[in-house]
Amino acid sequence: MKFVIIGGDAAGMSAAMQIVRNSSGNEITTLEKGTIYSYGQCGLPYTFTNQVESTDDLIARTPETFKNKYGIDTKILHEVTRVDYEEKVVHGTNLKTNESFQESYDRLLVATGASPVFPPWDGKDLEGIFTLKTIPDAQDIKAFLGKDIENITIIGGGYIGLEMAESMAEIGKNVQIIERGNQLAKIFDEEMAELIHDEGKNQNLTLTFEESVEGFKGTNQVEAVVTNKGEHKTDLVLVAVGVAPNTSFMNGTGAYKTYNDALIVNHYMQTNIKDIYAAGDCATQYHRIKEKDDYIPLGTHANKQGQIAGVNMIDQPRTFKGVVGSSIIKFFSLTLGRTGLSEKEAQSLSIPYETITIQSTHAAGYYSKEDKMTLKLVFNKESRLLLGGQIIGGAGVDKRIDVLATALYHQMKVDELQDLDLSYAPPYNGVWDPLQQAARKT
Image 1 (cartoon, rainbow, N blue to C red):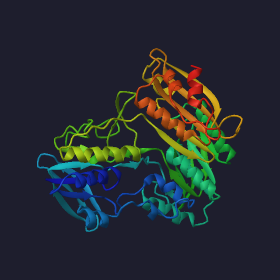
Image 2: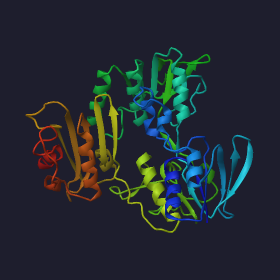
Image 3: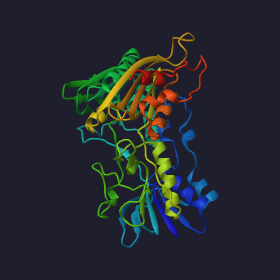
Image 4: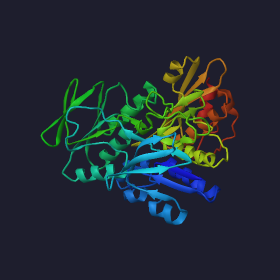
């Protein structure tokens, strides 16, 4: 059987390796628009501070490794432009030769990820305006930073915006974040976001809210960001306003998509088109708490969905169990963790809910007063089922958010948190964990 995989990163190569490891006698061809396979996109912000010394350190395996060690036909600079699902042929362009190519398949996996959204603002082609998604993106930004750049403007306050704000500040740049809404990190509720704002201000970031970008000014190089309320002088701009799935080449196939063009898949990673699968940032993820398809593009999901797509493509059925919406971000001295539904999401879904918010510490109170955390739980006021939680603080946030994610996965009630046998020693916890402290107050 011949398998064709479009996309050479997390989802695509996870699927390819599952096919290699769990079957034999098959032909696997991967088509990658760029030149780099299997790299850690989430590590890109940390290459600017040398926390990660080189972008090369982010590459897990090269195309040559996949080809020579595992027998996968890894093609680079091959951009797919159309899929003929009736003839089972992929059409595209070889970007190196500018010639067209065709690749037939028995089963096809779409694992093309997502690309940064870049609105059609005036002046968007000026030098010094960037997005960050790939290793070449990071290399381009680094090269430009060498031009005596002092003032950085980041448009958007999501994952990339926050992480890059921290990195740019740490290397001595003046950083401004422009957000068209009224808060950074919209995945958090407003009162929790205030903790993020306070940290940003304490780190000398300039936070500009409720301004919409309209364009850029400059001669050849960007000199100012123009918003609906004025102009902001700058030397470099990073646009980080979100991503969109790379699925336009699937137009005309009849594949079902969401409002943002993500391919809709079932628990086996199958699209509605026979023998076409999809996984990762170009596909939907089933949300266990919302009980419906969602779009949460993260590397953890891409790797899991890729593995599951791979075994299903070789008729070894396995289902994707879904996500609960867990994520974590480092922002200077804070760790920002969340999982499940926010209060805003519970409201939008018309779920009857209650919340409890407490302040606690990572360690026993008599051992250390440091590493404070603010913890918020959201739960169904009628059934008492946990719906979600947000934790912002220092050490220990990651531990609690993962416990909470596990509790959500297993549909625990808020009261049952008190029954968990969690590890305790004064340097790490109080007799009652912060999660249990919150549960006791509900």
